[in-house]
Length: 97
Image: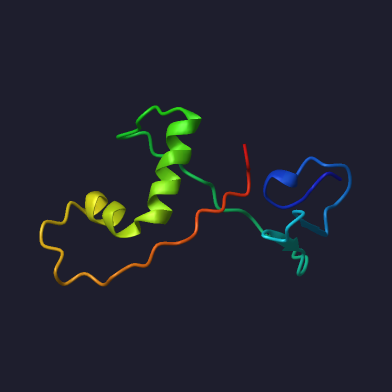
């Protein structure tokens, strides 16, 4: 068995708990459940833009720093007076390059 959370699947054994050296990310198993059936995952291919890894990482960083701007652009909102304020979040990716 080589199961685990996120990118840690594939390590030898069943990963029950794992964290990074600064404890920014900490995964702990909280139970087992027998799955009955499954829900397929569908990928939509309309409006797909090919991007490099660096471009995607920059988009994720920008979304954390300025979530309001990203939401406005995605929804194509002109008048933003009535929108609630969204606070920026720290950009702390689990995969450090």
